[in-house]
Length: 610
Image 1 (cartoon, rainbow, N blue to C red):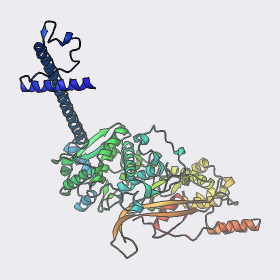
Image 2: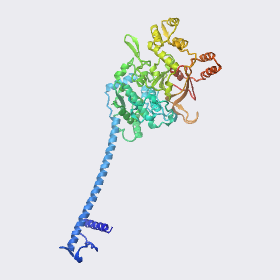
Image 3: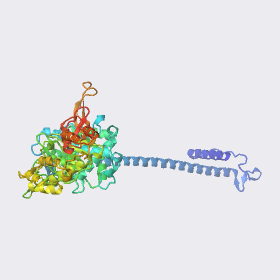
Image 4: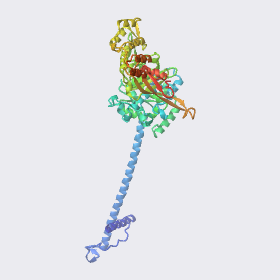
């Protein structure tokens, strides 16, 4: 310890000497410092004590100077490391800003002529300011109401076809893929998640986090855009650019505020206005598009969000293919005078093609002319109130989608019907037979969904569906030269199932009971709290319905079956199977186009499809 203190004192003295420029008085030696010097002599060999002290001073000064240099070197190195670290941080921040700027700004501009074609295809030449206002003031945002927070809220009347179809895909991911939302590849065709893995999905909507809702929305957008881009194996994402203000600075909240401020004074009343701000980016990778859409989500949440997504879908398909899909490409996709999304827009998002009809496949009109319908099976389906009014015929592809989710169309609005249990799609014996016969009939129906076929087509139906009427029955049904579905169906109800008909004396072809939900995204005024109390708020509506599909066709059939039962217990069972007192709303008519004879009950206000 003494030696270390001595060395420190020597170095301290040498340091003072080196700083002062002249040596101080020599340090007095201590006993034992010169052990080995004979008799304590004043010299060591030829070196005098004075010379030795000077040499020692020089050595100490050199050591102190070296130590000071090392210390200064370390300090300099530390400063250089701090500076390098600071530069790295600045570089990283700059790279992040550049990356975010690229995400927001790196899309390419379209030519003015292409934007003019796009704008005219959507709105036509005589679009009104009211219609443009509907489509330029609708963002893609989730409801802030806790009861409907899983739903996209709609404030304007026109874009409901886009929002409802997107909502249907969002529900697919929220209900059946909730545990896999962090995987960008679950939307891909090669993902390992098959329908067989899913029994009953979750209908606990209130517990869904905002992060999972956004991921489900991005998954839905990616799936739809790549579905539209199947022909070209790509997806095109439309965004905004060309702003003087940097949208990449700050967090998500600040970005949303900046976008809102920029768009607040922006009017899009022509193709030229749209051309100034429209940017597009093309993707062949689903993962890359997922990341990009996640980054630019504030743009789709802005008031131009619904329009941007429609533009993305149209460009993903390609404007030339869009026009080829349509029966009448001279008409705008947004219908006049109220600005509703056409069936072509809804079908584009459902099946990837902008076909105008909802029946299966094509309908040959002769002379090389045909009408285009849904080309193949779909992920989420479609039901129409117009079918219940015999104004159209929805085909099997849309009625039986892969997932129990349907867009519901009324005369003026689109909503969503869905179930959390895929088993509602499973058919019992009666339903399977009904679907088989209906499919055979529709294949021969060239009336555009009018529900009648030719005599020749009728004989083909009997053959395809293995139906055995008597010759007299066939002759009676063919007497007018055509066969109407309703008359054909009534005859099937009276034909024993052993002959290919639907009559089942046992009544064992199955009763069905399940719950189903209906979501209407249009925001309506609802009292905040108890009715009539508090400030009205705007929120969408979610309604849960209990559905019963009886195994027989009418209450009279039940009673007839009960009368034919052999014992009292069978009579009781048959009477207990009578349909319960049920409620009615236009939605029930839509449901019955999918589940004939269905009865529905709900609590609270009736579900609304307008």
